[in-house]
Length: 355
Image (cartoon, rainbow, N blue to C red; front, side, top):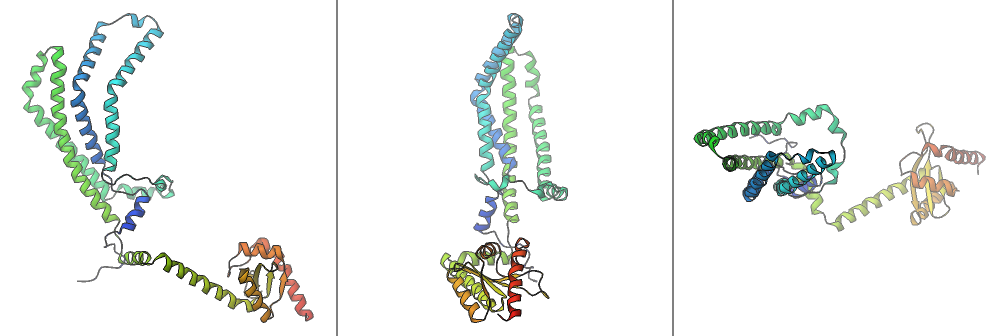
């Protein structure tokens, strides 16, 4: 069987990859599970508080049917009456609203866990691109969501129809019930229906959780090369990485020292900083820093410059400015052109005079 391409993501994601995606706020999430948990909490709260809610509604209906005229005497009286009713309603509904709030939080963290990802809050210009936005809408995940929504509507509608059909006689008999019995009968009917719908939503949520976890792991899969590179980074101890950085810095310094003999001039400060410049009007657009250093490195650069006859000039401010702004191998910035040009012109005049 032919080997799979190296660029194909066939490897399971490592813990490091999963941790990085979590920092970005990318975790497996199931909206269906959140909805199902909210419905379960709603059913439990209604089961625990249904008698109190029925009593509260009954009292409000009786008060409304009595039709007190005193509340309509003036605006202040009416507003005071409405404020009392609103406060009473908020107190009665507080357990329900609080339970749904907790259910929403619990449902959102049951699959992917609790995460705090400030990076996810940062605006992204790619989110404004209509092409990428359309790509996010039309994908496997969106089609699965559409399928789940259609399945919910069909299954719930079927369950509601079967349930109401089986209790058709009870529903017809409700019209003969007294007002005190009417709310109780309707409540029992709706409660039974709600339980059946909850069971369906829990089944759908379980299937969605399975799919979301599978899809998340599929999206986070890595290529063989990515796994190999990550393993190299993880295997190297801090001491080994520090030693490798020291070796790289030492090699870079050695390369810079080898370029000092090719410099046209060495600017010093006078002992703490040294900057070697090279300029060839035929091949360069601007002077280039071939080497720079401070303290011990500066002394080494000055030693090599003297040994190879490179002119050394004391220009403290210019040497410091170039040392801070330019890396070896980079050209001098335009803001320093005139100062460097004066130095190079001086060197050329001295050479013509044989000094």
